[in-house]
Length: 92
Image 1 (cartoon, rainbow, N blue to C red):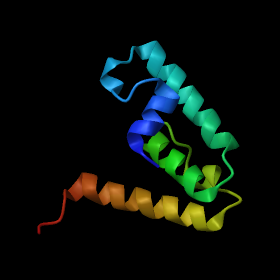
Image 2: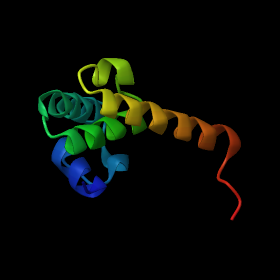
Image 3: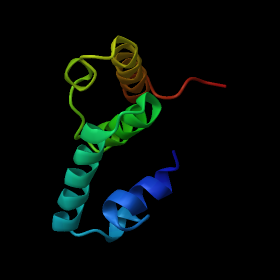
């Protein structure tokens, strides 16, 4: 999934900096609905990661209760994100 396409679809712009607080909240609500109705696992995971990046994602155990592989992937994603946040990028 293309990030710019997702932003345009759910938020009406590919530049989140142009959104008002109300427009952002409406976009997040549309994204949450999209996540809730999506059935294709890869697309569902992509929508969850966008929600996570925006600080709005449900916990993996809630989001993927019926999908153990996606739950594990989401937990791994959170662990990796935490490591990057805490320790920074690894040296090349």
